[in-house]
Image 1 (cartoon, rainbow, N blue to C red):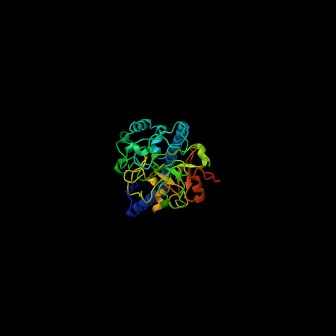
Image 2: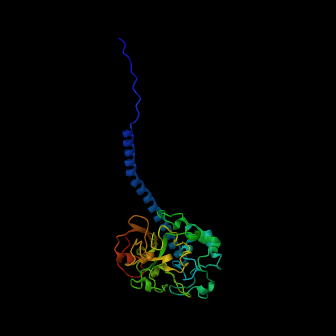
Image 3: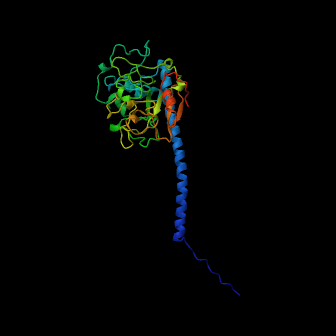
Length: 330
């Protein structure tokens, strides 16, 4: 007897089965995304640390060459480059540095030399104010150097990385440490900070005739225990929805140029804790877009990640060069 063969019926997914598959895929994606984001953030944090490492080593190389760290910013007027310009030759930006030096009509950069000591004026024959002035950072000075974007100055975790500041200036996520608040917790009374009152390492002179630069011998707390540069993120004046970023050459074109201390520097003190993002005090605070803390470069060139929960007394001590505190860098 012959058996009749019956071909199997082709059967596709039912709607319920399709929905189940989609739900499973969605769950898997939901499980994978946090892991992918963690890997990406770990890479960004590592790149950020490498940027600060380069800046820390650049500052050390500058000190080896000139026997002192660069001037943070030599005056409160808009006609001077800041420490970011001074370290350009040490982060493979020598051509840009030479272009900036070649244009002293618009801006100038003090180069320490001779027998100048900390707290002694240089250049001794030229007042900062006599170099001319401008109402804001001059975009054509140094062959347009202020408008150049430099990746070493940008943290990849910044959600606006690659976005230039207002009018196309090159932004920075790394600012020099002026020290602690010498007014005793009230920045508003510290109206004229200068190298003679600041206790950090990268100083704003804010003085028409004197310029201060720190030597290693001035860092009595030890170079490995003293912050030179730290990371910044969102603050009251720099919300994530605007482009009022600090810029690496010094200052910000739409924030009173280079004369605003908290636009090119930060302080480390109890009233200005790490990652404070709202309120007036936040504009003087370090912070980041990393989770739980921010990166800092110390005067010996090493970089560390400080957590938001760091003791504020220790935090303040690490921001000053001469407090003689018994605290070590984390």
